[in-house]
Image (cartoon, rainbow over the protein chains, first blue to last red):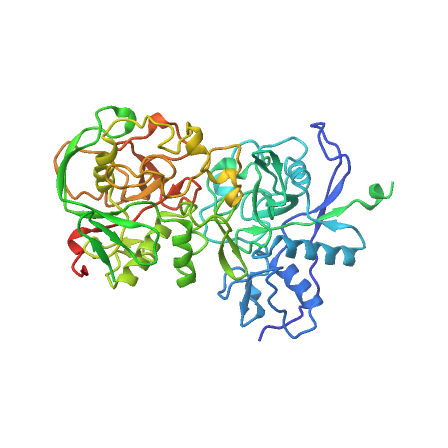
Length: 241
Length: 294
């Protein structure tokens, strides 16, 4: 039996991303972004705080954890179990809707508007104010970003960028708020049920797949070991202007 | 039970959308003198009789395998990022609507091997692949990927060694309007865009002279062999180098120019690659056809 509550509730650590930067770009409004993707430990504490039961339950709209160990949370017989050695893995197998629900819950804890970043906000943050191709520079450092792996590695495995953010390039893709829009025969088509992904993952190899400006997308209900997410907390001072 | 039509030498595999075409034993000149095709030198190859899928394994075919054997394909063997015909949700792999007839893509060499094993199990044949150990048993009688020599011999029946020329017969970068009208992007199937080249269904309006569909164009096809240089000596039933992690892929894809596609053109792909331009068709040694009914 997994111990349900841990001693202190883990919440994401945030770093400030300024509005406009040396490259002249930027979203016009500063924001706070998770230093690393939301971890297994943080997501587990959320699940426990939201659940009335002894152990959190499966919820296919929000997450689809595998029955076997390896990604930190397992689903056995409809009940979730924590693998305590894997608290620092980025939480994966969480759908876009599950990631949104986590953001809403966190927003209530913080008293701030909390959501997934847009792809543009993510790119701005990952570019470090200088429009870098990858999170830490304009050269693709494969051993650093994308060592050979068949699963996620713990968060914080790469150094901080100029905004104090880690792990933007590589390890797991990160859900963004934006819906996929594709070119149809008669113009752009949305409503396809997919959302944008950023950052690359252990499942891809091509350096271009990891570039800050590259976006992929996946079905909103996707639950896989190579997609996680990080939170964006809006800047209250600016938002109230 | 397998049914064989002796006139066309076509074998139906129950539950699958493809048939198997028998190619008799043969000796042929393999390769091409021009270096650009990575297919020099021309050399003599002798093959035993073999069976080859008349079309690529479709997403619908693969869906039956995934549903039948949960856990046989892990996330390092299949990719579920767009565009693609499968998504992976809490309950497992899901075939997207309107996608069943398109080729199975986004799968590694070993996912294709796992599918072949599933067919072997269904037919009571011995598995060719140990997917966990990443080994191949060439003496096993089950389903497998075609060797590149088998693939080339079969493709030469329909197309000779010359580059493809008709834009409406091959789904290439240069596809004509009739071919382009069948593309996944037209209906946004698999979240493919209509602004870019995309796959067409595995069944062509007209198969080639050997009865094969889309050998040239549509998707690159995983072959059994590891990639290696040709030698000039005659060889019998070659299956490539013993070491390495790059496999031969054949036939070109919707993303390549028509003029690059031919029975002799070769490419190498890292065997773990999961990409929307890689698919496969199955093969089997015809000498293993010992339980033919009728």
